[in-house]
Length: 368
Ligand code: NAP
Ligand code: FE
Image (tube, rainbow, N blue to C red; front, side):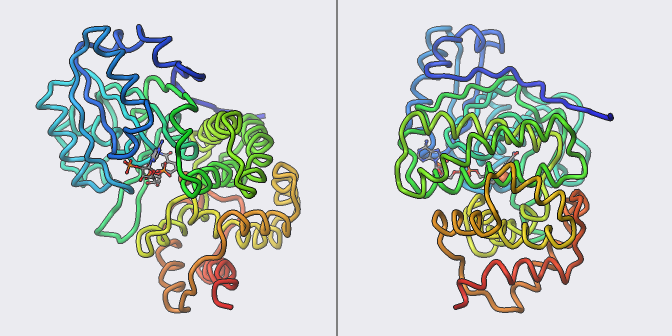
């Protein structure tokens, strides 16, 4: 058996974990820059962090200009701010957008690269140490070496990957996700389940990543049933956060698949939220995989605990149907996706025409 696995993040999970582990912040230095968005700062996380920093006499600034699907411009601004504040470390508070933006800021704060260089140069060496605090339960960015930025030149979102982008520590407290609106809760939960499914299809999957993926799906799937009926208790919030962290630990080692690659166009051009974009594509992707690799698809369906029809219906109950797209638009999305590197990361290989068929199949309901 061949196996590799690497997630060098110190994880603190549980209610009040920030307050209970205040000393950890002190070990990072004397000056922090908090990186967050406007509403992701309003769930108690920012308050808890500021109170710990004040208690430990750590100076801090707050950069709260992170937009959804962060652009290089906003990362550049954050990098300048981190330099101006002479920050010893960053604390990212928010969903995937602030957490990913912090990773880009960590590089630009310490290295003399143009923001566009994040896409074109291998990221190595010195970056600002990062502490990540997720306030959505979905991306798993707190345990991954990836940052996804909007790439205007290529008209898509593009992933940057480097072991240097792993945060040093992550604090996961489900209280910070308690007031997430239902639609964001659903979309982010679907992102997490998509990570585990796509991880199982990855050419880099192995016994350990499969174990994590199967465990995350075992935890997440019953919660998606509750979400469909509108019930979101604190216990559910904790399970969603834990399951999404496990799914993050999967993709940290496997990467994602054509679902994420195609989903980027739905987000870039049509403003579909990231997790929802993946969920709209997942049923047609699974059906296409079954035709080419029945055994692997059956293994994934077993992990989901569902048949093809049941997973389609569950995602439909959660997300409804997508827009009605023209053939021309979907052909363009298939063409963009075919250039994405995740396409080659999948054990089931698809041509551009087959990617188009998955996209077309995903939006048949919307077209009716
Ligand atoms: P997000 O873009 O970070 O946040 C979505 C919305 O939720 C924003 O309006 C945000 O407010 C709000 N929000 C966040 N926490 C909240 C809370 N506790 N209460 C109320 N509102 C809250 O969404 P996301 O789905 O978490 O992240 C998506 C991004 O992550 C995408 O760019 C995706 O490509 C990326 N991603 C990264 C990885 C990775 O491994 N690095 C994996 C998957 C996805 P603000 O605008 O104020 O922040
Ligand atoms: Fe994702």
